Length: 395
Image (cartoon, rainbow, N blue to C red; front, top):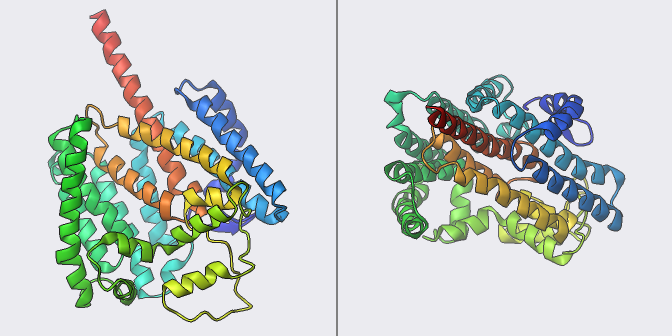
């Protein structure tokens, strides 16, 4: 997905190929024996219909409406595409990870953010490249390395945090901590879940207060912008304060949603009054200077909230239901053990972070693949379990 073209928005080669195979994918969906696939497809279709109604009601431009609708269409088709592959063999995911590594090496990051400055280079190139390399290692399922999976993710997390990529760092650290707990007790019951999460939260808070903040203050970790964000909160020991500063677009997306909750502002709607731009600059304690060459848009830097801010509460509620369905399947996959537990856990955390704080277009990238992976693993596990039971019955 690293080579892109501007066709009704940014489109990758993978997306063009998937569009060409769309009729076959839809036929496969109607004939597939994967449980609930047809039901969840109807919900995707219903969301698309409500999006069309919303774009019509708010009188959005055809180009912007088409861009918003194509995100949903491509996300669903990519979900089907990856589900069809992975439902035959979940192990194929390792080739996807390898492809990401090769694509990063050959083409760099797909949106060119890594070229902005030194900090961006680490965040958008080095951090994902090393993260995918670690994922490739854990997916190899080497018996000798399996006991070091948690340590690998912990080291990855420290490396990313030190380099200035908090997103990859936090996901990796939490993966390492949760993986250690999960592998000690693969059937964690609900009554033990809260104490377990409290332990993880305490360990993470200790790392944040006694390791991360002091190193950011001394300038030994991160990039200058990390220190700027920390100083805005007076180096608060509460990571939520940093989250609200670093991900202020999330709060602005919620504000935009609440201003027009029924049908939203429309996809890629312009910030005509500049109120969101001014609020963003005010949060960063910077003076706002209007630039005629810049396009000011309603904030949609959250896949989840952009459904509401762009198309209103009906689309938002349907999408929340779709997400609950997929993540419930992901959590069920951990019951009774799983060969891909380390990668699945990391994938859940990365996709959740993109879901809450990533730009709207991430729905047809990381999140679509994650949804397919969650369903495919559950499908293969149930198939293998049914095969074992049938063999036991005939024995």
